[in-house]
Every structure is written in structure tokens, then in C-alpha cells.
Image 1 (tube, rainbow, N blue to C red):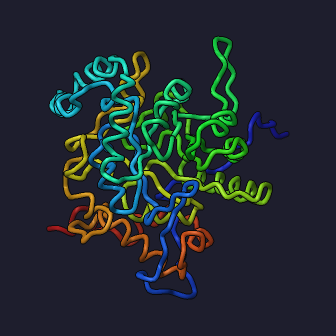
Image 2: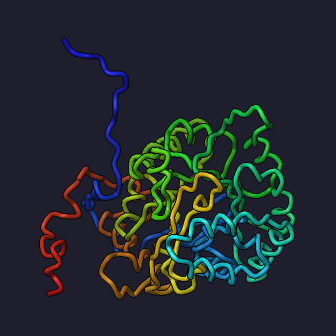
Image 3: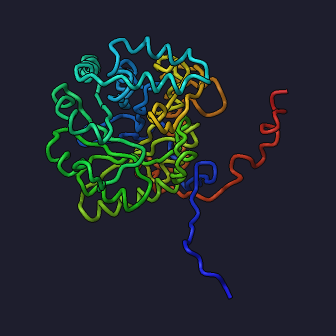
Amino acid sequence: MSTPQFKELRRAYGFDEVAIVPGDVSINPDQTNLDFKIGDITFGIPVIASAMDGVTDTKTASLMSKFGGLSVLNLEGIQTRYERPDEVLEEIAQAPNDQITALMQKIYSQPMRDELVAKRIKEIKKEGAVCAVSVTPANTKRLATIIVEAGADILVVASTVTTARHISKSYKGLSFVELCNTVPIPIVVGNCVSYSACLELMRTGVAAVLVGVGPGAACTSREVLGIGVPQITATMDCAAARDDYEKESGRYVPIVTDGGFRKGGDVCKAFVAGADAVMLGSILAQAKESPGRGYHWGMANPHASLPRGTRIKVGINSSYEQILFGPSSITNGSQNLIGALRTTMGVCGAATIKELQQAEMVIAPAITSEGKFYQMSGLASK
């Protein structure tokens, strides 16, 4: 007699458990088109720098825009709490490991200043860059008018987990339907990992959805809260929601796989899983131009009572340009990400990102270890 199960579990997959199958036809990598759109804004590369204080400031936002991508400035971080943020970033970089969480809780306890919100947006726009800014749902209604009047191009509303419906006894929650109807710039919302949550968010009228809960290198939400879905499965489920929503409404809402990337192969797998773009954090934090000075931390790290992140040392090994476009000087796949993406598209016979989404993928848990004895044992360099 079998015992009935309370819940049926399904298998979910991360980057290291799958592999891309080359196509039957190949094309020249330089003939691939990487265009990506949010609303009516087109980007030359489908790469977004995450809204983290160690990754994006006004200078890197301008630089990323010149390279054809997008950076998102965290409007609830150091840039809008301090007139001279570089001094605070230096303090974080110099802090000992056993003091960093308490220091960040103190630093982030300072109030956000509305005048700095407008000032940072204007600094980015002054350089001729596309300006995207990020706020949490709790502060969206208060800051939306300031953001629009300052000239921002894209508003990102993000939290660890975001849903279209929120239940609260204390206040009227944020309505994405109302927000999309009143704010005259594209609204990007995240994060989610399921088909149903993604579909509901798209039905509110948002311009794009961020996919990923807890995969970031500096995030500990999966350990602290036990939540999340590995990124390949999360992306595939949300891509299914995107495609079904397009059939339902005639409107295409791109999804952005956010977090968990370590190398070019991960980026390529995200697109085959269905992503329209990727959001990068720790990889870009390694650039010499990044504000973290070789360190990276998540937005939930300084939470006053339940910190869900940690400062990690990623080091400084290259420039923004080298990380994105090469030439690569290391063999771990963390440089020349665009070159890797174009090469994968070439061997899959995909001229566009949408064609790459149709490439075959297989479950392959041995993909990173098969035949790699010398690399894994450290004998390759001896």
C-alpha cells in the first residue's frame, strides 16, 4: 500500500545542469543581431547592469549606455542618501568582514533625499545616456513624480519578490495597473520566478519583467528564507507566460533573467531558456570603473532586522569594455560576454535573440566536469 504524497515535487534546473545543442546550420557571429527593446527604446546589446550600489553609479550608467546596454541606478541606495557617495563607498570597501553588516545597516539608515534623486537622474541625462532607475514598491508612489520630472527614461520597480496582488491591512498597496496608466515612461517590474506570477504582472501593463529570486552572488535570500527557483527553470516558466500573454493580448513583454551569472556560458543558456535580456551584477562589479572598488553587495544586505546578503570580494580584473566586448585575457568566461553570445548564436544558426530562444537545450549535469580532470584537479597549470 503506497502512502499518498502531500505535494508532488518537480525538478528545476540551474545553469550548470543544462547544455545548449548546436544547430544544424551555422552563421557568421558578426551577422547576428542583438537588439533588445523596452517600450519604444531599443538597445544594441541585451545586457542590463543591476541596480546595486557596488555596480551602478551615474558614471557607469553613462558608460553602459554608450556601449549599447542599460544600467539601472538604485534610488534607495548610497547615491541618494549622501551628497558625496564616493566617500561612503570607500568606507564600505575598507571595512573588516566582521563589521561590514553593522556598518551597512548604519549607512543605509540615513534617509533618502528627494533632491538627490532628481540630481542623480539629471547627471545621467546630462551625459546623453538612457536613464533607468530602480525603487521598491513601498516608495514608488512617492518618488514617481520626481523621477518623471527629472527626466528618467525607464522606471524599475523591484523587490526580492514582486506580485501583481499584495494584501495589507495597514495601507493601500501599489497598483501596477494604476502606475502604468499614470506614469508616462516604461515600467519594468520584478522579481518573479513562476508562470502565474509573471503572467499576472504582464496583464497589468508593465513593459518588462525581471526573473530571478535569490541567485545573485551576494544574495542570501535562498539560505535565509528558503525561497527561489533555479534560473533555467524560472526563465523557461516566465518565457512561457510571455508567449501565452502575447497570444492573449498581441503585446510582447520581454523578460530579463536577473542574477546568478558567472560566465559567458551562463548568459548564453539564459537566452536559450527564453530570456530577452540579462541583468548582471557581480561580473560587472569586477570592472575598474564600477563603484564597489572590487566589492559587491545586494540591496537586502543592510536590512535593519533581517539582512539577506553579504559583501563579497570580486576583485578588479578588467574594464567594462573588456568584460562586454573583450579581448578576453582570462579563460574562465567572465570576459567578452558579447563575443560569447554571438559565437553561440553562430553555432546554433540563430541570427536574432528570438531565434536563439528556439535552440535545443538538454539536461546535462556533467557538462562542466566531463573530460575536465586536469582543470578540476589543478594539474593543468603545473
